[in-house]
Image (cartoon, rainbow, N blue to C red):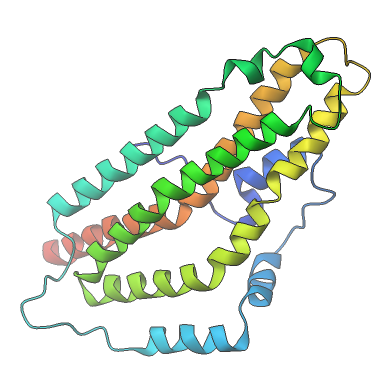
Length: 238
C-alpha cells in the first residue's frame, strides 16, 4: 500500500513545500508554530467541546470487539488505496483545451486563466466528494472497536466539525494563488504556448499536494488501527 502521505510536521507538508517552490508563499515559518496557529483556529467553545469528547467514557455494550479485525483493516486499506488511486488518476487527466489551447484564447488576460480556475475547483470538489464518505466510514469502523479507537473516532469527528470550514476557506484560495503563477509565466509570452506545459505540470503538482494534505486524517485513523494491532500482538507474545 502506498503510504507516501505521512507528514511529520505542518511545515514539512508537501502542499507548503510546493507553494514555496512556486513562489506563492512569502515565508514558511519554522519551529513549533503549528500548535500556536491551531490554537488560533480553536475557539474557547470548541476547546470545551474537545475536552468533553476527550473525557467522555468510551465503554461500549458488552460483547463489543476489542479492536479492528484483520479483515476490517484489510478492507480499510483497500478502500483507501481505491480512493487515492482514483483521485490521483483524475488529477493526471488534463483536458486538451487546457494543455493545448488555441493561442487566441490566451490573448485576453481577463479570462485566459478562468478555464484553469474552473478545472482546479472541479478537482477540489471531486476530492471532497470522495474523501468525506471515506473518512466517515473509517470513523464508523473505529467507533465499533476498542475504547481507544472509539475515542479517536470521536475526537476526529469533533475536529472535523471544528476545522473543516476554516480549512475549506484556505484551500479555496489555492486557485487564486495559482493564478499569480499563471500570469507570471505568461508575461511577455502571449503569442506562444511553450510555457503552458510547465504551468499545467505545476497545477497538477499542486493538486496532488492538496490531496496528500487532505488524506492525512483518514490515513492517520487507518494507521492507528494498524498500530493498535501491532501493540496488541506484542502484548499477546509477551
